[in-house]
Amino acid sequence: MTSRSRRRIPIGSLIFLALAGTVACAESGLTADLVLRGGKIVTVDDNLPEAQALAVKDDTIIAVGTDAEIDAYVGRRTEVIELEGRLAIPGFVESHAHFLGIGDAQLQLDLMDVQNWDEIVSMVEAVTGDAPTGELIRGRGWHQEKWDRVPEGAVDGLPHHRSLSRVSPNNPVVLVHASGHASFANAKAMEMSGITRDTPDPPGGQIVRDAAGNPIGAFRETAQGLLGPASSGATPPDQRRRAELAIEELLAKGITSFQDAGSSFSDVDVYKEMVDDGTLGVRLWVMIRASNEELAVKLADYRMVGYGGNRLTVRTIKRSIDGALGSHGAWLLAPYADLPSSSGLNTTTVASVEETARLAMLHDYQLAVHAIGDRGNRETLDIYERVFAAHPDKTGLRWRIEHAQHLHPDDIPRFGQMGVIASMEAIHATSDAPWVVPRLGERRAREGAYVWQSLLQSGAVVTNGTDAPVEDVDPIASFYASVARRDKNGNAFYPDQRMSRMEALRSYTLSGAYAAFEEDIKGSLTPGKLADITVLSKDIMTIPEEEIPSAEVVHTIVGGKVMYSRTDGANDR
Image (cartoon, rainbow, N blue to C red; front, side, top):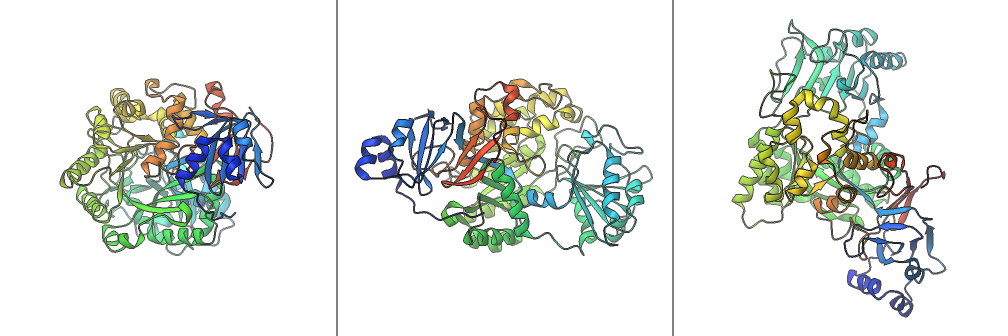
C-alpha cells in the first residue's frame, strides 16, 4: 500500500477552471488524472450540493459538475470510474478513535461479541494450552452489560476471577473492557503485580473487591496501571505492524482521514517514517498524550501541520478528566442510580489539566479533554473558560471535549457560546442505550445523555466517530445510529435527539475537518480541496432508513489515488 506525492495546483487556478467549465479546460489543455462520472455526488458544499461527476488533477479536485461538463477533462491517460448511479461523498473523517488500538485489537482475543463470562473463560482456556508457561494472554472488548446473564458471585455485575484463574493457573491474563476504562485479571496476573487485599486504590482508580475485601480481579480506570508487572516480560506489539493493520481496516471502511485520540511521541516518530516511505495510506491527525513534564520538553519540536502532502498533523494535546459510563468511571454531579455509593472517578486532577491548558496556549496547540460524565464536562468547560479569559487575545482556538456524552442542561449552551467542539460518537448512544437509564435514571438520561440535536441547536459543532476499538470503526453504522437512534432491539433512544441525514453526513465530513482546522482543504467535494472521496453501494441519503446498514464501501480514494476497491458486486443500490 503506497501513497504518492503530487504537485498541488494553486487553488485560485482550480476555482477559475471549475467555474469557467469546458471552455477553460479546452483552452488550457488541462486533463484530469481521475474522473468519477455517472453517479450522484453529494458534495457537502452549499454552493453546489449535488453533482453527477468530478475531475481530479494530482491530489486535488479541479472540477465538479454534470457528466457533460466533466467529460471535457477526460484525456487518453485519465482514469475513469463509472459510478453507475452510486453515491460519492467526501471521504469519511473519523473524529475520535485510537489508531494503533485498531491494529492491536487484531492481535489479541476479540471479546466484543461474547454472550457471557463463561464464553470468555472458554476462549482463554483454548489458547492457554498452546501458550508457553508465563506468557501473557491478552484480550479486549468485554462488556458486562451486554452479557445474557450475570456471572455467579458477581460484584457490581462483574465476575470473580476464580473460574478464569482455574483455566489459566500459570499464565497471566489481562482482559480489557470494551471502553478501555477497566480491565480484568486472573490470580497469576495479580500475583505477578504484587496485588493483594492490602493494596490501596490509586488516585482516580478502584480495585473492585468482594464483601471480605479481596480483589475479584476487576480494576477500574487508573487502577489498571497496577497490572503493569504482569505484562512486563511480554514483547510489545510492533508499532508499524499495528499501524499497517489499522490502515487496511480504515480504507476498507471508507475512512480517508483519521483523528487519533492519543499517541505518544514515539508513535509519532513511526508515523512520520511511514509518511516518508509512502506507507501511511490515510491522512493522520494526532493528539499527543503524555505527562505535563514530557509535554513541556517536547511539544515545540513535534508540532507539525500537513507534513508530507497533508498526510500527518500533530497540533493537539489529549487529556482525560474522568472515565467511562459503562465501568462506573464517568465523573457525575450526583451518584449513579444503580451504584449510589459512587459518583464516578476523577482520573486526572483539575490542576493537572489546567497546567496542560497552559502548555497548550504557550506552544499553540489545541486541547482535547476526554469528559463523559456531567461533572467531568462541567469541570472541563470551567477550565477552558478560565484559560480563555486569561488569554483574550487568543481567539478561534477550537478546543474540544472528547465524548461529551452526559451533560447537565445548564452546560449544553456553553459549547456554542465558547466555541468548544463536541467530539462525539453516535454509535455509543445506541450501543449504550440499554444501560444508560439504569446508570443515570430517566430524567438525567433524557435531559443530558448524547444530546446531539440540543448541542447543534445551541450553535455547537458536533463531530462523529466510533472510538474504535471500543466500537467497530465502521462510519456507516455510526451514521445509521445518528439518524435512527435505535438500539440493537430496534427501540428508539430519545429520538428527538436524532440528526437529519445531512447533519449526520456533515458531522462525518466537513465538521470533522473543521474540528482539525482543515475545512479549507477537506470535508467537502469542492474544487481546490484534496481529492478524498468515498463511493458507497447505496444512497444513504435517500434509501429507507432500515437499509442504511446494508450500504457498503465500493471505493476509497485518498488524494486522487484509489486506495481500496471492493472486489464483488453484491449489495449494490
